[in-house]
Image (cartoon, rainbow, N blue to C red; front, top):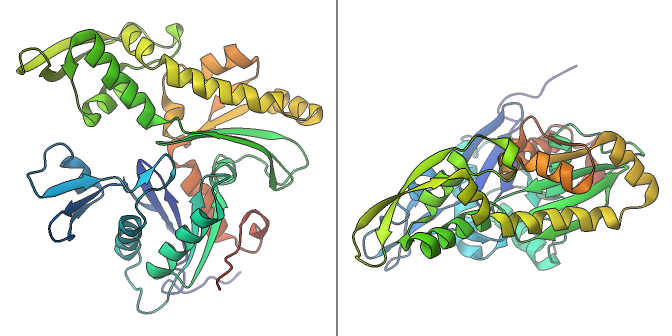
Length: 344
């Protein structure tokens, strides 16, 4: 078996997520994982920072500099900024771009409008790709999690990202049923912010809420001991800095509403599933992918609510990027799961 020269093996895959963007380089695997954040100078429009550096300054920017997240609820909210961010990440990883323009696989949410497909493809072309393909995120997640997507049996994947949760039943290389709800990690963070504000008259930022979620959040009582965490913010009454102690039970109460929305999406998808495929899912179980799959006790909670076996994918946060990257490695074999570009 012959291998392509290194300077030609530059095909790429991108998981353009609401919270994080991951870049997979053919032959090397995931080479970049940074927040989908861009810091802009509001007066000149110049990019000040992108990715990790930009996220670090959220909530700490001086006047005239703003940190924006160009993707909202799994779709492009700011096309121009998304394009500039994608170009930055592609050029950062594709160093020999003057020798070869890469083919690019981009993962997009299932069921997005055709205009979104075109926007993503155009952003890829402007970032330097010679050809752009899209793959739906649940399919990419299933491939990345090692599920047998091409077999004539049903598999179910629940991909919980930053902006959306996508539930899909897959068989014979296609999505049979899918459901997408605009609930994900961001919604959990916002629920924590609202809870702390209501119960403790304390204002906290997005980063603090995210850290609290990772530290003590659980959605099943048996999932963790009664962990506690200190939360620092600004007292709404005095306006001064203040620290409160929150327990895992309190955070569980805070995130209950968005978690129920995720569970309802899973149950609604199972309700629409053909009997034969439902039997396959009962045998194979439900695979959880995405960063939200790491939420403590979520697998136990879904197991209790649906009666189905549930397991967290081994590489849950990276599943979409790995699945899209697998397509970049094997275009010919996995061409059926890709939506080819149609440029006018």
